[in-house]
Length: 123
Image 1 (cartoon, rainbow, N blue to C red):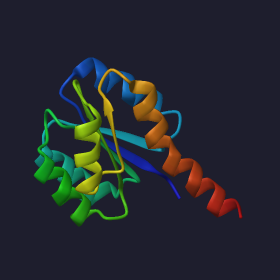
Image 2: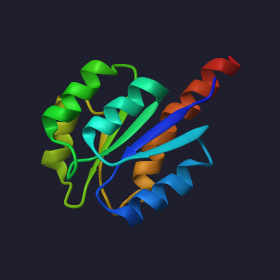
Image 3: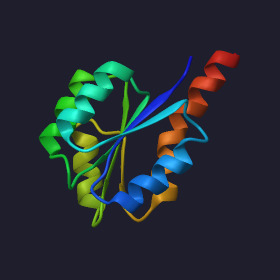
Image 4: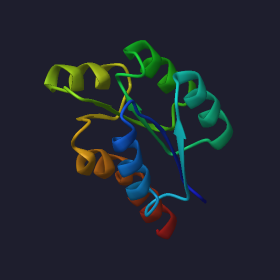
């Protein structure tokens, strides 16, 4: 089953870096410019992962996205993410939260779900 990822990022350089790296692990990578566009893309593509910049989406947006797309893994990022922000995002339903500059961490969290799906299909 093809896996998709949808991105909402405030920094175009980070968006490009993530999209290029995610293209190696996902069937399709879709970049969005707003929470509404993200929600529409997620409804259409049913992604396995959404990567959501908290400078473009609020905590209530993330909580609403998780309620609407419960099986989708949501990875948040923010340029000044800290432990308090990480805790809060997990409390509202996100699966992880990373500083925006830590693209390796973001990619690792996003790819975890794909590896788990491959293992369960192979079993």
